[in-house]
Structures are given as structure tokens and as C-alpha cells.
Length: 224
Image (cartoon, rainbow, N blue to C red; front, top):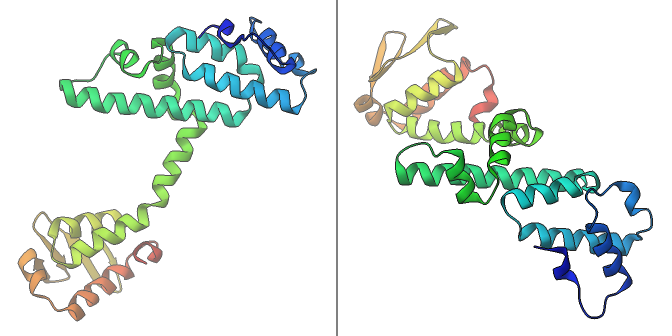
């Protein structure tokens, strides 16, 4: 979108200052010294509208122009937008074509430049935004493990094996109790529990198994 598109027959003072500012090749914080709060808010709205209409290299050039005056929160939002657009495109194109898409295909699908995509793929794991996302996933681990335990208690041997392996209960010994997980059964000391056996257990017996597993948990809160 060209800056000239913002020009109207009757321009306010804020509009004239904003247009003149956006004509600069690079905008710095000192260029905003004569902008009051209202004018800065107007500038932010205009920049947002312009950014939404730009793609590929034009988008990169505009972001590079306004980068010195962008608050950290806006930079984070742009990173999150890029990350979501790229991951969605990879998922869609991989499912559609049965192979990993090229950077050119990702650029066509997302509207982002090939340079932006290359940079994001190379650096995303070290970005603070990625770290925050992974911490959110970790927070959900106890809830997920509670669901896995529910299936295990109902006789799903694969869920039981996953549960025991994840919490570190397999091949450990505490209070003379040994819990082992195999491909098609669970062994507690000399007692073997197959999937069929688990289905026949009463609620009280399943609770007893839960207590045995809980004793070898590194963090008991995992099954709360």
C-alpha cells in the first residue's frame, strides 16, 4: 500500500505529520519527539492498517522502516503471527501434497517473504516466544497424565504402559514392590495383569493399583 493512499482532500495536522513521517526511509525514536500522545496513537493505527495490506518484500521493508519505534509487545505479536502462519502452512501443504513444502511454497501460502520464512525456521527455537509456548505445553502435562491414567484404570494396557513409563514407575523398586510394564501386560511383583484382567478388576482393586503406582511416583502431584 502506498503512503499516498492516505492523502485526502482535507488533511488534519496529525495526518500531515504521519504522512511526512512515513515518507522517511527509516524512522527513529527521535522522529517522534514532536508527536503528542494522540498523534502517536494515530500513527500506530495507520501503521497497523498499512501492515495488514502488505506482503512479501514490501512487508519486510515496511517492518524494517518502523522497527526502531515498535514496542516489544508489537514485535512479539508479529513473531506469533509469522509462527502461526508458517506452521499452519506446513501442516496444510504437507497433508495436501504428502511431502514437506519448500520455502517458496510457504511464501506463496502465507504471503510472507522467503527471507522471513528462512529466518524464522532457523531461529524460532531460540526466540522467547517459542520458550513461552513450550512452558504452556509443560503446564498441561499433569492434566494429560490424569486422562491417561483414567484410560489405564479402565483396562487400556497401552495407556497403562505409557503412564508407568512416563512417571518413571517401571523397573523401580520401593517398599519391596516392583512394577514392570511389557507390551501386553503389567507385572506387579509376581502378579501379572493383562488387559483382560484389568477389565475384571473392581474399583477397589484398581484403586489399590493406583496407590502402588503412586508410591513410586517422583512427584505425587502428577495424578492429582
